[in-house]
Image (cartoon, rainbow, N blue to C red; front, side):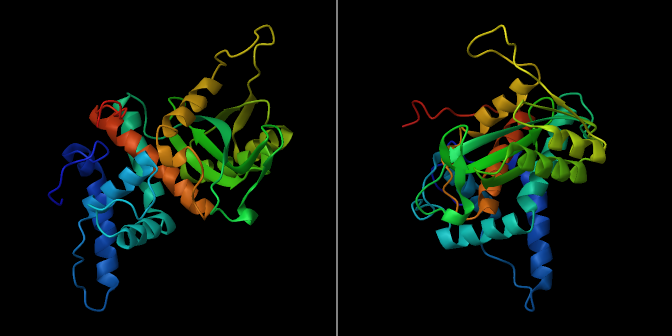
Amino acid sequence: MSQRKPYPSDLSDARWALIEPTLTAWRKARLDRRPTGQPAKIDLRDVFNALLYINRTGIPWKFPHDFPNHGTVYAYYAAWRDEGILAQLNDDLTGLARVKEGRKPEPTASVIDTQSVKTSTNVPLNSQGTDAAKKIVGRKRGILTDTIGLILAVTVTAASLSENAVGIQLLDQAKKTYPTISKSWVDTGFKNAVIEHGAKLGIDVEVVNRNPGVRGFHVVKRRWVVERSLGWIMLHRRLARDYETLPASSEAMIHIASIDNLTKRITDETTPTWRGTY
């Protein structure tokens, strides 16, 4: 790693040890395909620290000056996004985090929720939409978590897409990665289409209703877990609004936020609040 004053978002040695094998194997496979086989000069840890800094602070790609060149960082990010490396890291770390909690690596139950967010001015209009219920013009994030809130599946669509369509995508994605899933809880925005699709996949989808006798906010059984997970990723300012040109990049930014949280969970490190840092 380069010699510079560290940022609170930087990986510790323990956290880097969780990520390094996957990224090193990825680089070796790419070098093996090169005609020259020349080793790359960029430090992968510096690249990932740059991604964490962008993800945590919300700063534009070109602004950080003491990381590798922003074009280089983006090239690595785009490759990891398109080749599924970020998703793979999230899945592998999820298994480790579950084992640390005394659970089996493969989950059997899940919770689904969506979140509509506004987009920035650079986001193409054809990838946006209007969430009529929440009166938000932008994109819709769908996440599927296990029962302790670890993210198992992610999808980002136009905000106009129905909860059913998002839920079906999440169930398909989760069942492919985690065939052991047989139960899922959803809110009342998800209708029969999700329940019927879940049944085809061997997943019992149950709608959890709010308590009609309680006014205002209250904790809803099972659903609070996934709502807390959405709160966790929103601590990463890049996700306070959707700044990404491609929905795939929006999904990748959620994976990076999840990787950040998972590595801290596994190594028992706390998440900086940024208060009093400067």
